Image (cartoon, helix red, strand yellow):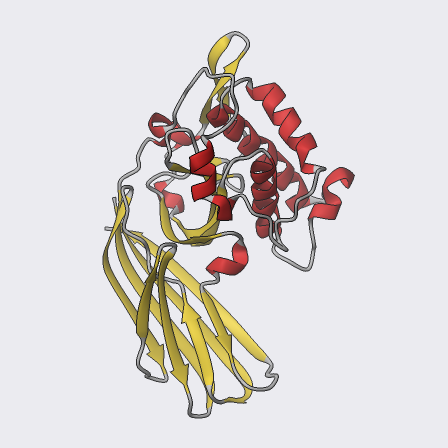
Length: 302
């Protein structure tokens, strides 16, 4: 389907800012699952904008040298998404070996590395152990089960305190969604699965219940369909999820926040080792300034 995204970021500085420099990661990617047909980035006050293409996505940069008390960034995109059935893309195997070829691991070593936000915590092995015991053999089944497990805990943590065993993993001063995504990254990387943090958009009206509410899992009695719980689509917003490298040597999207596989309701913008790599807008300026930021996202199907 074709989705038009209107993303507005308005920053008001309590005292005028000068010589500020910004990086924007707002342009959707074009790959096998989606094509960015149109993109326009507008900045006020008006200023030249330059673009740099990185493997992880396009980065736009600009400067505002004159004093300004307000800055607005408008990003408009038209994207065609094509991934209607993500389950059909998963590599369902009966192999007992839970590992990727060494050459593949070396090629994507950055997404096995731990960071400040994704620490190398042996406690995450307990989560992986439970998921593997429930899923049986197969990396895809493991990741589907892990997604479902983390979603259930996320729903619990978003309505009340996180379970005591998981409280050290969460910082209430940060975004709870980011914490859960970083937790999933840590679990995957500890298990030798390259995993990366993806930023983008989620279109709730494109939620496909016939696809999203089932998971195929490998168990002792063969493949079965397991209903997913939760997964109620929220309002349109800038969103994030996880991509994992599977034995078919392709990246597949898993969303523990919505309990979904990334499908054609998702628009990928940027990816990195953790949330710090994919900030939609990052700026710097001399001194210390207080500021208020307002964000608006509208997604329409065409």
